[in-house]
View 1 (tube, helix red, strand yellow):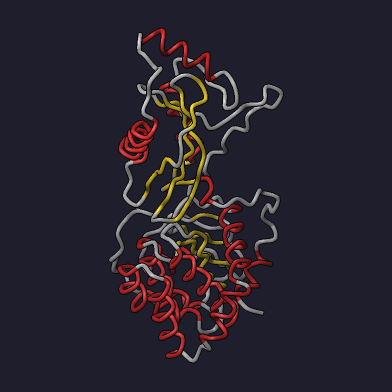
View 2: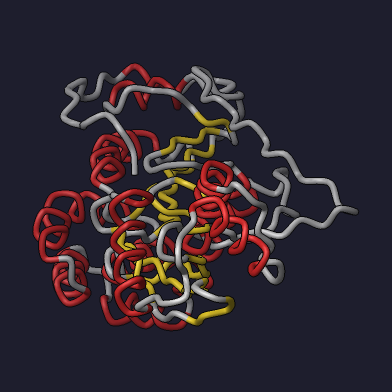
Length: 350
């Protein structure tokens, strides 16, 4: 049984009834889209605008307040103005872009404008805004008066020491091409090479915010772990040192595939078998990784989880080794070995 499979059984104690949701549908650079829209709506709204009715009343109130003539509006020009405003003021993040795809007049001078939001040219969300020639109304939620709101659960803070077990399960949650995650993989390679007989080490590439080439790499890493668990850490080391520096710049699936296959071939890994797995099982494995991230309340890359607990640790090989060694019921002799203490990683996360 591969270590990836062992990891699945070791996680059975965790709650598995949490809803499986794709982060691409709800998050942009770590912010909930509905939260952004609701906050903006609360700041802007002088009147409460329903998502399906009442727009004429709201429009009339604004017209009376501002004494403006809303009869004649150039919808094409307004569409571009609204698009520019949202991008400059509500998003304003590199690689994230909103596009207004239409404009339908639903009351005198008031337009419904469908939008799409892209992150690095990948569609991540869509919805509608409403605008007249002076204001933009952001409305993205309807509330059932008979159903109480579910309050957000406070994120569990990382701890310094993990729960103990005979054979710790060590998971590093990353995006395939997140620079901070990649910089953490290097130190963990050292730890896994030292303690792979005593503990289970797994990389969980759970998100693909950089685009299709990252989606592909996530699936490649999951498939290598599934098919060649004994060679995975050598592949991970090659990815960090050879593939990432080149393909993170090019950002193409062609570069990612070509360079990854070179590393696989050099390690005696059948690249055709791995790429076949990417096509046939990759999506399922990726969904499992997302589910695992959700069940651990992972919020960013990298996140180190040992025996189900998020661990706050310096991103050096020796610090990670010490965190793993503290999770053993009986500490193995290999824990006496000192690993690299240099820290070439930038602080932060994706």
